[in-house]
Image 1: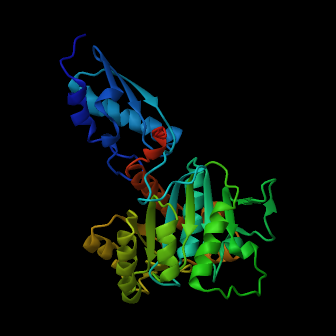
Image 2: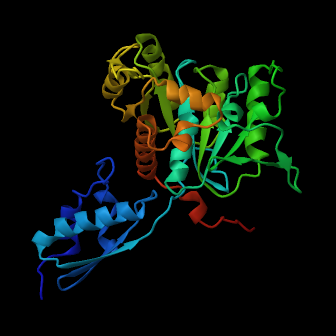
Image 3: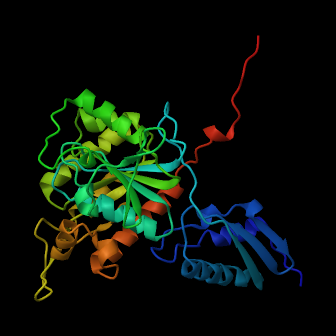
Length: 363
């Protein structure tokens, strides 16, 4: 059967393709040379740039078939290329060889749940099929060992590099492993930045799709220096709906803009309290503050997370809720946020520097 359509015609139709979980547009990921036509049959190479489960793949296949049926296409063969690519970092920096994408999780101020968001985001990305690590860069208040239920110092490999322990599906390193529980890190800014760079480079990270960096709170010298010196693919900013926290979001956004780090979106933590007894919802810290701020700043809103006792109890026990209770409302919200982050990373420019051979000038 002859069909009078071209690959470009199908591209226009496929622009309506959406992620089956969060509804984000993903049709732009298909290019004209990804489509081969043979009569009424279409073969499409599809590389989403993030991990899709078998159920996701089935839903996307069905969507594509429905979109192309009015064009006379009766059969679609979808050739999947599942996985994550390495994306561009700040000018003057090189991506770390074994780490495809570093994502900085930051907050304009402390006390907004940045570390809890970081660890649950990391675990949710790992549950999607990615290889994930987390670097606890909050040297004055390292909390990832507690959140992940880990103790003791990392072992060393033959190169004297620290071997990051693995818990709940993610690799982790933290200054918390190197300090005693009652020992304070009394260091000045330049020492901290140097130490953190060493912690990053002297860790024997395996091949990772994402490394989540739990940043120090605020926008001071340490956070700024780290944003300048660590090769970051994008950043996530955590806030609460409270006006006081939202004031500092602008400072965080400005900091990342100045060092040319893309902002992947804003997470509104503690957005609503749900009574564990009666289910009554109460907006203790305000309502829709983070969402409205995202709209004002023209940034993606990644989602809101509840103020839930269950999240705190699991965190204190070293069992992040996404791992401990995957069906909990908070866990499902974290997974939706992780999906948005993964898609937003996949939409960033690719790192092309490593694709070109070095140029050697001979005299």
